[in-house]
Length: 266
Image: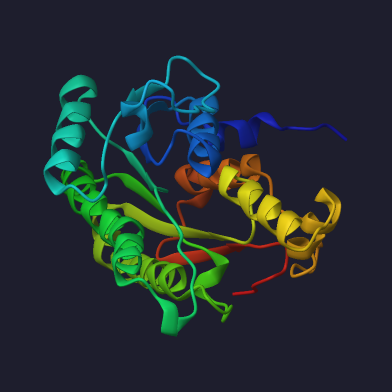
């Protein structure tokens, strides 16, 4: 029986598309930028870290554009997106990945830190989508992928700020999916469980020290909360983002996809 994989390759082809990925210096953002570039898209990686010469960067393709951008600064976002349009003539894909985390029990919450999480994880998504959507509506084509989290659907203690921000992002995905559907602008969200990002590595190392665990024991501390007993790789998140930006996903909008190894089932 013959194999016709080229049919699927055509579905994933993003050549001619221009994508902006926020929080793209490392972790999920870098993996997403790399995946979109591998699929043929022209990628602009946006991250505050690019303003620092010593920043750790995990982008594997030197042709990926890099721009320092603060997703919470409306003027900065507007200028960066205008620059993308000026240089490339269009902006087709936005991946809202920039995020931060802060955990504390409710009675010990530092409200400045709480607000900072909401500002980046929620307000940053709103600001970036506001300006990207205007371009995409005008051209009658667009793909917006929000990076939410399994925490939007769980009830894990001390995750108040992070879970609140991601729950809001997941529901905005539903609203914007309906709102932008008449313009062929599709909005979906990925909701990963634990992913082996630099942040996750830091969490494993912290548990390793606190509980005097080996690395393997600290890894299992998190992995045991997931039915498949493993932590996701960032490449997997990049691959899923590429799927949602491709023609393979043109029949879905306003949806949240649980990439959780069984931790959450939507």
